[in-house]
Image 1 (spheres, rainbow, N blue to C red):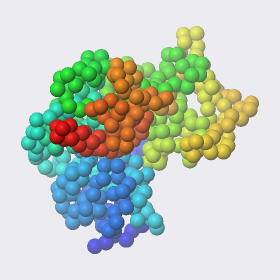
Image 2 (image 1 turned 90 degrees about the vertical axis):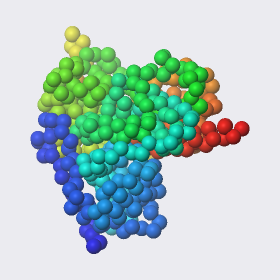
Image 3 (image 1 turned 180 degrees about the vertical axis):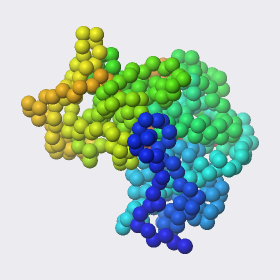
Image 4 (image 1 turned 120 degrees about the vertical axis):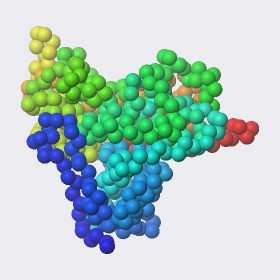
Length: 464
């Protein structure tokens, strides 16, 4: 029976005053009954506007119809046809800006909870079905992928389905990229990522860790090893700084370093001896999802005061509304229209305060957001002992510095065409290494596109 409710079925969550002291997952997921009730809100539109909003083209009405009928395994199989990481996407994709933004139910109420349903289906399958994916018949062709993050894993999954021998070269000691080093356990449990990656391995994908391409192997050496094409999905892991006084003080972190210590190096676990500074008051500079992750992690690690310092208003924040809402619930304080100008330290060169000025919004800039303008005589201090800078990242230059014929733009991003082909024959690139820091699902979409382009390139090459 059709559910006419204008609102989504609420997602159960941990209490904010309990969860802000641990790293347990915040959102608890739907029960089967909740999932069926939410699925019955879907109108099953003929024109499928939601699919057009999905970078990996999940057949959304079809899988939701299966959920509404209680056919959860069948729903999973539909999702898996185009999405290699459904349990991940159900948790971290900004559905409100993509598939759910196109949902017809959103015109006069809330959109269907597509992400919540995807998460439920993936979790149900992991818990109840003990079946390895079919291993495709090999086609005798080899492809190398640089980076085991969302773009690389998505590309690998699609190529493996086509029978390619796929080897992923990952610089870290664990596969997953930003999924394991950047996104905290309370948003994306690492066990979920591990299970998704194991599914790819079962299809024949091989992952070589501790492999820094540009040092251990060059692009040329990979071609010499018999790989017919190479996909670069190495992300954008080089942090940006503000260039203000005091950034070298003890207690100043890039968000990348801070979150890597917390997540990949397991500083959040008491039995791990990963060094991270005990903090009483923390300022996180930035307004994106990474800033929210760093702030919420700092709170869980025991900081009494945690501030988000952002030079525009909350309306301009690029973070997901859900993450902003959760951060506020957990006691994070928002200092908006505030811009840091100096980090102050003591004689021991340790952070003691952040000097800021107040801002107001002027006309829109090239990004479409209103430009922040400094107000005179508004200098003030915020007492903190730790500062985390979360204002963006760019691609590591190692690969481009060691590869001839690979064009990059002024931001250091690899130049690739709409089909992910670079200026070097046989080399494809996608995700953050091309676009700069973006979302998990956009990187996965680039990986899917690259897999199709690589298959076409190899097929055409061998015809000749």
